[in-house]
Length: 286
Image 1 (spheres, rainbow, N blue to C red):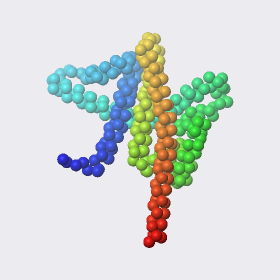
Image 2: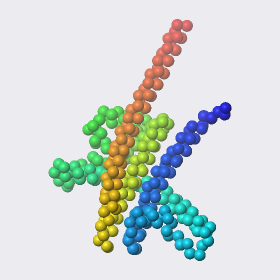
Image 3: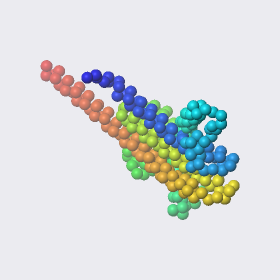
């Protein structure tokens, strides 16, 4: 029976991550492609995402004209390939910048809700907005400050001091950097969580953009498309909640994996010291 080389599992894992990233860019990319095409339709003659999506599926923009049946199918195939490539490219662009804007939107909604619920003056409590921003250091200090301090100390011991003092999302980024360079399984888990959060963030922004388009569509015609508005609202609430929940879970999981890595390294160090002590005792006996 043919044996599998040791490099094969790692190659498969890398290929799997590539497929996950591709799908994570393709799905929101298609959604954004349909929404942007809908925006162009609204600027010309009106429309909605459902009609635009049907037009993309049916390749409605391809004129049969004088084309033969074979030429028409070639044109349709080229159209679908172009839409797919454009969607992937669009998905990657949104993925690169969308997660920051999705975080800001979620933080703003949570901050406004907190001001309304506790009758706070937004001008006097503007600083509270940062509490809801990624990586939620202030909230984690309140909920589990010991774990955050332990993760910070571990990051300080493994990365240069200039990194942990940089004006970035610390100590989260330093902990993730250590994980990616110290353990393959932890690195894969961190990448998977990041890809999932990016996907949800892109879909959340798309649903908000869809809601804005639905409201804008009311002005020229005054027609009330309740399916579009209600669907966009429900999608924005669902994806916004899912994004914020998974983002918090990503941060907590990263700090937990950091503490697990620290414990593993301490255990290895203790085993080495015990083995060295045993070797020294054996040498004395001889």
